[in-house]
Length: 317
Ligand SMILES: Nc1ncnc2c1ncn2[C@@H]1O[C@H](COP(=O)(O)OP(=O)(O)OP(=O)(O)O)[C@@H](O)[C@H]1O
Image 1 (tube, rainbow, N blue to C red):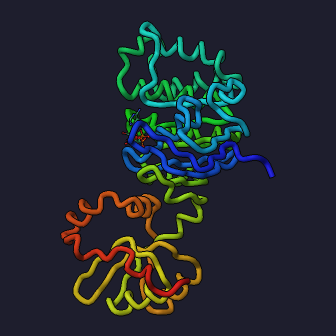
Image 2 (cartoon, rainbow, N blue to C red):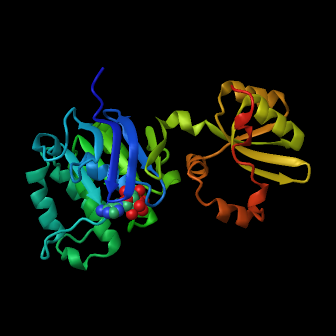
Image 3 (tube, protein in one colour):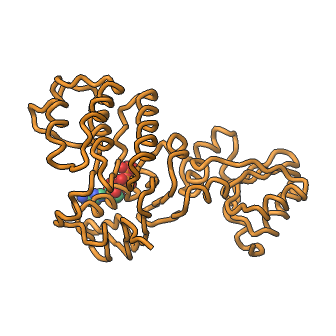
């Protein structure tokens, strides 16, 4: 078996009394596209900083290409880290960035970069300081793609990109990855947009990993079950499903549950319940407790109508 590109064991990172990452362990498979997802302040950038040697762990072990990344040129020469806050020299233009890129990235493809410049309609000879936010994002995205680094991190680099430009990024990423497989870690809040790109998903919440699984496994795993209140409740208890959200209207209940597999799906249908899949984004939003109040308020429900994790105490699967 090949060594995973990234192996992290019991990593803790503290900033003074603030614990940004707490005892996290994960592996990121070689030649995969992994989504690193989580709410603001979850610890995603901190993790990427440690993995790219820009910060040291407080404790725990971090291996990138089998070695410690910090101050390790042998590792870092294979790594591209693309972030929104990238600083460039004052008088730099995009043309300077792309001309100097081959010094840092041995796989740099100048033709691919030129094609991307056209795709993103990027003015090559305008000072970076004068670029719009989207154009600045495009510079980073082009570096990340055309560098073809064996390990590439995109830390939400497309914040400024409009919807068309983001779609171009996703399309080019996927096409180029198919031709030149490599390990890509994408940190983003636009989960639904990238869901189809992802092969692996890692979700961090408050410095801890709460989901780490192949994307295919997660996609079918959450579902909404609707039916008569008593039937729905009896079903989730019987199957030991994890309730992420529950709504009631008259005698009907709708529950969003995690832990759905083929057996559960067949059983639900046989029990006369309706079962519809929910998106990866919905699963993650619920798992990280985000937007609960907002969604419930929008839906006209009070928080009390939710019964979180009630069925957890129920029968095991
Ligand atoms: N240098 C630092 N000193 C003190 N606290 C820090 C430092 N860097 C990060 N933190 C804190 O660590 C936590 C994790 O931050 P991090 O930037 O990793 O989150 P994130 O998941 O990338 O968030 P976002 O999605 O908002 O970018 C936050 O609470 C942040 O305030």
